[in-house]
Amino acid sequence: MNRLVIAAAAALAIAGIGGCKANPPGKLETKTITFAEHHVFVGNKNQKNPLPSTPQTLADGKEAFSHYCVACHGMDGQNTGVPFVEHISPPIPSLASPDVQSYTDGQLKWILDYGISPSGMPGSKGTLSDDELWSIVVFLRHLPPAGSQGIPEMYTH
Image (cartoon, rainbow, N blue to C red):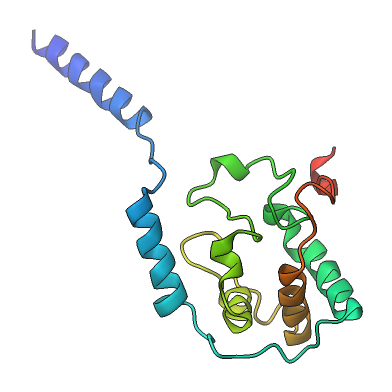
């Protein structure tokens, strides 16, 4: 009888562990963390982009973005063609979303510099130059329409 109880308990424990799944955050959780990110955690709110918003800066930003950001954000910044985007927690945001676009340029640069822990968004300070990072901010302000840039080449094989 004891073996049966132990076996049943072990089976339930294994099923319980295997059946664990994190639920997406609710509306209150999302609003709370969004407020905290915009007003507490992410710095440089008042820093201005020193680069002009010109066609050349936009092209430079798109080029830098295509080398460092497309693996998670897609060619269009809206996760198009990223095969794992539905399986990441916390979710990878569309960079065209109001939550992302409501950051100031300085805050976007800060996120690019330092990343967002524990989201998986890495920091690029020391890897990318300030001009590359600021040009990416310009690109983020002028994202192409969703799906218009196709699937990142790395996911077409």
